Length: 95
Image (tube, rainbow, N blue to C red; front, side, top):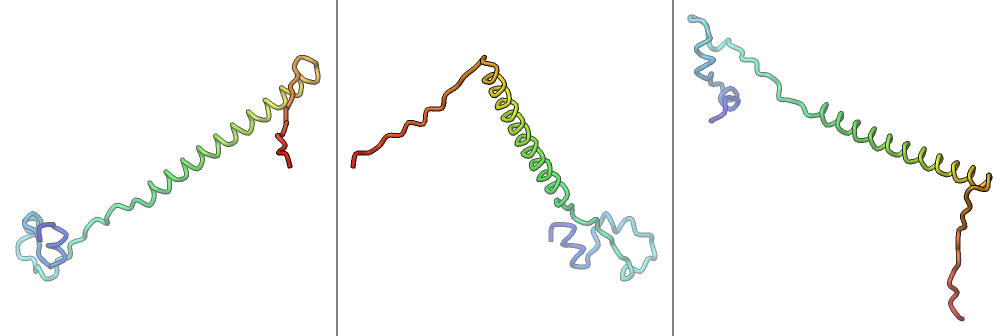
């Protein structure tokens, strides 16, 4: 029983709390209220929301850049300033 929580669970009053109780108080009627343990649910959810939002923003930026690049290539191709060829040569295996 080294931790104060263990002492309180066992019904013992730690010395620092015992000194704060007024003299003449019936110790059987003393209720000690502890602070609830910290919840990590909020920070974890916030981190997941931030990561998800960052990924979504990066995907939108990548999509916009792709659309802008395709539009620029289409405009330059139509005006004669740029041409490109896609070579889809396949190697045929002899039968």
